Length: 576
Image 1 (tube, rainbow, N blue to C red):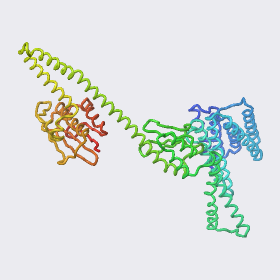
Image 2: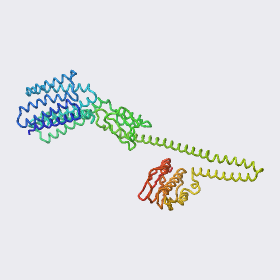
Image 3: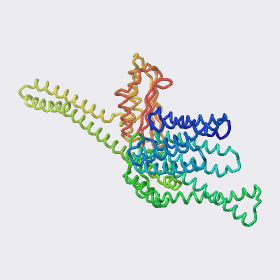
Image 4: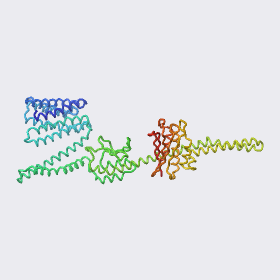
């Protein structure tokens, strides 16, 4: 197969596949149908030209290229003919295509093609201005693909002089990009911000034209001074020097486009200083400062799955920055941007740590408020329990003691025997009241802690422990020889956790041995209780919940569960 029909076949197959995909997705139905017909005609024309039937092949090519292809463009993404502009575009492309198909001369084809191109360009521009947002993005995808393809074809044809049909075939094959671009525009218009692609394409094309112009100008100047016979090394040197104009052109052009789209950009250091000065307790103010400093449409702070603050209007395309594990900063890209610029990256490198610190401070403040609330609740619950115990238990008993003493006093002279009985009853009630007081005191703080200390109190409490089978359980307690003086709250929590864990071992395990290990470190006390037997399932119950609550009340942690040799409970309590 010859080179030119091969390029036509490639472009036609891509058009057929794209049109068929649009039909399957039920998008741009009229345009997709015409695309399938145009692509099929192109494939047929390529086969006819390759097999030597040039006359019939030219007719099919003219019909596909001059009639169906423009028709697919003016009916994309939705066909319309009621508006005068739509009707005029349809009549022009169909009439011009019919003339080209009938006459098929180079001059007529060139003239009609120029008219059709102008009509499609003007019609597309008008539709972009009046279309809805989704259709506007689809039309921009189509316009971008046509512009890029046309420019590339122009460059290829410019370089194809005297090169046979290989480069022209490549130029024709470039139209294979149009069909996929139309498919993306109709089905996935938000895949990439097409405005960003347009900006990059404009910058690249202008930069390329600038380099080519400088190269041609340099050759013309060399020819003017008599240097007409240049070797490969000289041409390479001229090309390298011409390429030096590319980066300055790109930077200037990008700066002009940014200025036209967004106005004057702030200095990165000034923007970072402005943002740093506003980062405080209110994250909304910080986000607003970031948006204003960098001219961004949207910014939000996300912690876990919850959005804690936002500023601006959410955009389709955004980037997410990690705040060192404290959360995420979601930033909406400016229209026409595909990524952050180097200046933006510099500002974010300076401000992200500050935002992370602010989020951590916010989280710590929330934890402190919650902890204070839990502490106040626990204190109030303890007060309620003490009030109930005093009112319902000790109060009536002491009242009875008072009444009994009055009765004994009244009977001491008239009935001494009855008075003696009342005094005996009085002593019994007093003993019970003392026991009640001791029970309440023990509930607040075990006396053994003050009398013996933590480790001896634990050894005393572990004496006589038996497992669920009734067998005695030996408890080994290890602790540093010089255990530091512990705060009262930590001492009570450690004692209660160990006692509760040993009670669980006795109740649920068949282990003959339990170990208790106390270890102190820099700012913490670790308590570990373990057994070496089979335990019942470790579903959280009142005992485990009570131990965990005691640890968390102090800002510590507790982990409980089956270990490799038995059950294990490990609590870490902070020390001042």
